[in-house]
Structures are given as structure tokens and as C-alpha cells.
Amino acid sequence: MVNAVEWKEGAVRLLDQTKLPTEVVFVDCKDVETVAKGIKDLWVRGAPAIGITAAYGIALAAMKISAKSFDDFYKQLLPSCDLLAATRPTAVNLFWAIERIKETAQAHRTEPPDALKKILLEEAHAILREDIAMNRAIGKFGAALIQKGSGVLTHCNAGALATGGYGTALGVIRSAWEVDKKIAVFADETRPVLQGARLTAWELAQDQIPVTLITDNMAGFFMKQGKIQCCVVGADRIAANGDTANKIGTYSVAILAKEHGIPFYVAAPSSTIDFNIASGDQIPIEERNHTEVTHMGGKQIAASGISIANPAFDVTPAKYITAIITDKGAFKPEELIKLKISRA
Ligand code: MRU
Image 1 (tube, rainbow, N blue to C red):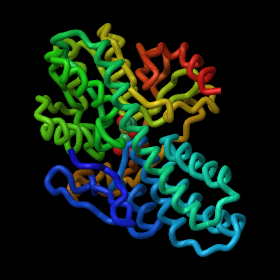
Image 2: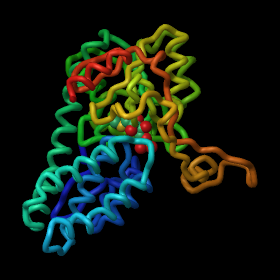
Image 3: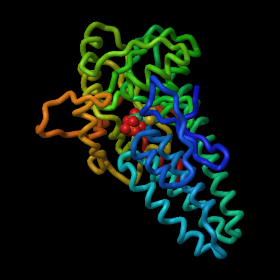
Image 4: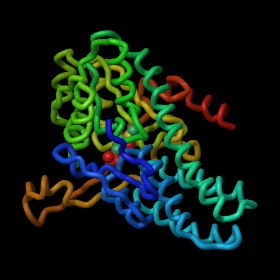
């Protein structure tokens, strides 16, 4: 499996996911501005991958700083942190990673700037390594919840492409496949940007995990036919009460699952939980460029001159979520608080 993001010879190497599935193209970002563009324009996307990329982006910006004191170094670093923080508003991992790198710098303020540069890069590497380890743990906890022979529906792409590797929702699917649960995977195509069709289906095909691609409006049909026994999705931000922001359309899938008595699981690392907000009402929802709705592959598919809306995410209320599968285990939404206590 290719890496969505990695540090390569002094640059942040991103797989340009806008080109998938027909082309595998990497971009070596040599400055923080290009890294920010890569996040904004979806070369890299998916909450954990965005966080990892931002951490590397700050490390890259740090390399170019010339400063004699910590205060001067930190003052020069902050605009890059702000630039990255302004790229996408919903995925909390972005802000979590930026904070972690800033805190690391502060914790080592007595080090000379040249040593600090190495420390920040090492912290970005640690964020990447930890993310993969968390995904493996999520996979294991999640696979235990899946019955043998299940049809498993996923929405968007919460796979290796959206993380440091292995994936969250796709980590659960990979792990279930590895332990021979004989699952049948269904992937929603995920309009408007088609992360399901272009990325999830491609990623599973690369691993030779069979997948059936369906359009978003087919999920209810297959649930009614008894082809789907559970849903597993990722998350961009989980509020303290378990309300979960994820790719637009996730909320509709959750309601369909409830109606059909099908368990609905959210898989996410603990870095996706935002204990600073009480409920999903406080999660900012990104509104993206309207051409994502009006055009497909550069071709206009909608009438001209009409009104368009393009919220990139929706919030699934906790009451529709059977369990949140984290690297620390699976929790009912109302049990998430236990994680806050163990974090303190
Ligand atoms: O707009 P995107 O592609 O960044 O949205 C991604 C999603 O909604 C994913 O499901 C979520 O970030 C989880 S990724 C492990």
C-alpha cells in the first residue's frame, strides 16, 4: 500500500489523491505553503492524515528558520501553524497535531534552534508511527465486533489513504478480513468527491479485499434485502457526548441502519475526540467549492445559474451510534467520558 504522507529527503511527500484511481502521482512539498495547498485542495485528506501532514508541514517550516533565540524561533514558526490551521475547519486532528508540535517546541525551549528543528521533525515522525499503531488496535477491537459472514457497509474513505496507514474503518475491515471473518464489503461512492468510488474501492482492490461499490442512494435497498449486517465509518471529530462529524451522507446511513436494526460503528483514534465541545452542534462544518457538486471530472453536470450547497460533513447524533471503536477499545457514546478520565 502506498503512503498518503511521508517525510522524504527534506520534503513532505503527498500522494495526490485527486488523481486516483487512474494515476498514482506524488508531490514533494518543499515549503509549508505547498503543504497547506495540498490539504486545502484534497491531495491529502482524511482526518488523521491531515493532522500528520500538518505536523510535517510545521517541521518543514522550522527547517527554514534562522534564529538565535527560542523566542525568535517560535515567533517565526507561528505563522506557519496559523496557515495550516486555516486549511480545513472540521477535522480536529489538524488542530490536535498543530498543538502537539507547538507544545513540543515549548517543552524544549532551552534547546538551541538547530536542535529544536530535529526535535520537531522527530515529533512528527512519532505522530505518524502512533497513528499506525492506533489503527492496528482499532482494527483488532473492531474485528471482534463483526460476525462471520457479515455484509459491512462503509462510507467515504477511512483507510490507509486517510491515515498514517492501515486505516480506521478500513482498519476494522482489513483486520476482520485478515482473521477470516468472510465479510462482504459494500462501499458507498460518496458524492460529491467520490472518496468511496475513487479511494476506498481502489485501496481495497490493491489489498485484494473484494468490495461491491454502490451509489449513495442504494444503501437502504441493500439493507432491506438483508445484505448488510453492520456499518463502519470513520470520523472527523467526535464531541464529548459521542455526536460524530464525518463525511456528508454519514447521518443518512446511520438513520437507515437504525431503521433496519443494523449496528452502526464509528472507528477513530483518540486524537479525533474533542472533549472541549459538549455536543456536535459546536462542530464547524466546512462548506466546499460548489464546482464539486456542479461538475464531475471537469464536465458540467448541473444546470447553470442555480443555487448550490456543498457541506462537506454532517453530524450523526450519538443516539444512532452503537459503539465508537477507538485504540483503547469500543465504547458506547455515553461511555466516552472514561477516555477523558484516563487522558487526564
Ligand atoms: O473530506 P475528506 O475526504 O477529508 O473527508 C474524510 C472523511 O470524512 C473520513 O471519513 C474521516 O476523515 C475519517 S478518516 C480516517
